Amino acid sequence: MAYEVDFVGSDKATKDYDAIAFRYWSQTQNRWIVCVFDGGTADVGDDLSNNLSNYYLIDGCDTIDYVFCSHPDLDHASDLKNVLQSFPVKNLVMNRPWDYIDDLYEKVQDGRITKESLERTLREKYKFIDDLEELAGKQRDCRILPAITGCPLESEMCIVSPSRDFYIQCLVDSDKTPKMDAAAKQNKFLASALNALRAAAEWVKSIWGVDAIREGEETSAENESSVVLRVKPASDNPFLLLGDVGCKGLTAAMDYADAIGIPLAQCDFIQIPHHGGRHNVSPSVLNRLVGKKVPQGTPPSKTAFVSVGKGSDHPRKCVSNAFINRGCAVYVAKSLPLHHSRGDVPDRGWSVATAESFSDKVESWDD
Image (cartoon, rainbow, N blue to C red):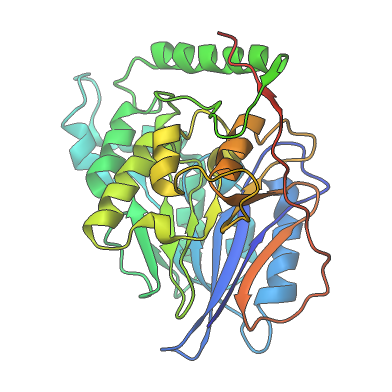
């Protein structure tokens, strides 16, 4: 029937962030279902709110049906507080680590830690989630739903990752849990970040059909815990929102989707995860998620959006090329918003965005 998705770009933002709104026409309810998927940082709060007021909460619709917090990072979760303070919300979909306190406590190795102290620590470490929980409690009719597979959403929406067990494992692997060797993990990811900074200074030649992304890259446990949401409006192909998920979470999502008969390769609109970072995708994952590489000059059959902040060096060219290689038209929401739609939606009079071109040079991996 119809749907539209907005990736909110802002001239004020200086760091990478994700702030996404979408709505689709529900045949069963004969109305628009309005949703927010991540809210970005406080810097872009007005931009997201204005987008919702101007294009989504119109024609008698004054309530957001679902707010999704994909994961607890600042650049995704912090300005959802503004959304909950500014608009009525029916459902807040997010994971709260303290909901799994019994499972986590079984794995605690420090005998000085009690369940109560563990919960206090988790609430301090996941402050944005704690704040959202409190704000949702102040809205009379706002439910908090767990953002895991099997969560009861509208029939058109399905969370395909994380599962309950996968999310708990991400918590166990997280540097934020008190039992883990946080210094070792931080050093590991710090080394990856330093390598990325060194690599950004050098460029290497890129050839169509040859991936410059690699197998075996890893991202943080928080990123892997990101909600992977598949939305299938009536009479339209499904679309896919990914947060900052990495290869482990994407593989889990694809396995689950295959098992319930909704392969994610059917999606013709895809969010590029983690602002186009190269540690979140691999050739084998993209072959399965997007499709095999196509001959150069083949018209795009899919669309991919990615959000970055003003002045960012993302998305990485090697990541954009990998999606373009597989038949995606890639668009970047940076200083301006991006709008994607299908079916009978109001004309906004916006200009047509320009897709990214295949780059003949990409970032060196500093090998």
